[in-house]
Length: 144
Image (cartoon, rainbow, N blue to C red):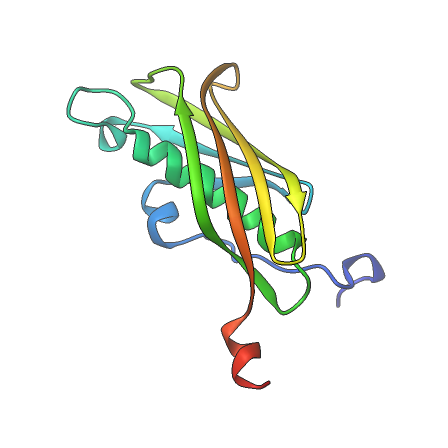
């Protein structure tokens, strides 16, 4: 039975599934103010020249920002990506990435989240800004 402290909290699936699942992205911390996740870097995540593919960093960034946007949005609403900007500042061949997403703006219809991705929790690999649209859930739209 949920406690009073759980009232109004949105739940997340145990597994992100989809492309996030294919990349082995694991959520570590999930709040409306901060989302963190980790992901391994293996040859499966490389571009043809043997380093982390920039698109993989973008998927990681949009994944954590979207989870944060969903959690920060009102009940009955979700977050969907509108625009992603990513600056890749360091290459990575192997190891583990950690992404931290924090909101810069949480408006009624849009959110902007900043995501910093670090290698082994230290060196900055990518900094990203994700703009999200806050939209009514499809199930809720059909009943209105």
